[in-house]
Amino acid sequence: MAHFAKISDTSKVLSVHNVNDSDCLNADGVEDETVGQQYLEKHNHWPAEKWIQTSYNTSGGTHINGGIALRGNYAGIGYEWDEDNQIFWPKKPFASWVKNTTTASWHSPIGDAPALPEVTLETQATASYYEWNEAGQSWDKTTPTA
View 1 (cartoon, rainbow, N blue to C red):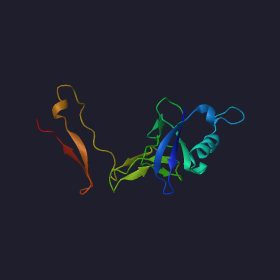
View 2 (cartoon, one colour):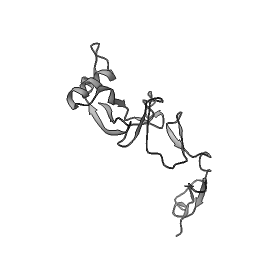
View 3 (tube, helix red, strand yellow):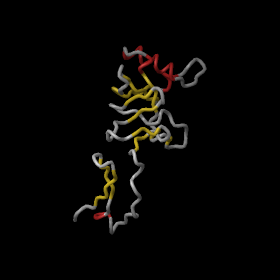
View 4 (tube, rainbow, N blue to C red):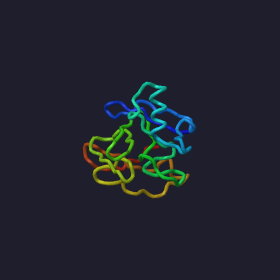
């Protein structure tokens, strides 16, 4: 099953459609994105170039089964299509965060949150975690109260 994102004129993902593999095969019997786009245009009355193939198995720039990652992330409704980098981007979590095109993910402007000790069954209820503080541009450690 092939998956295609329907893209708006402002590069937002409007929906994601499944297409039978047989409807994406070229004359040589090879899956071809262009064939799938033409099929979707014919049956959905939306321009072929506004259908972008996406992979259900791709997240964070990695194919979960070890295959070739396709377009950074599986497209979701509301995602942004970045044609220049060929990546589907989820909503930006904070105004200050920046795109990392290698991992197809958003990162804080100061890097990842600091590491925490391993959580065990005994410590999970009171385990600390870090939350992004947009106003302070920092990772703030938070410990739940029991």
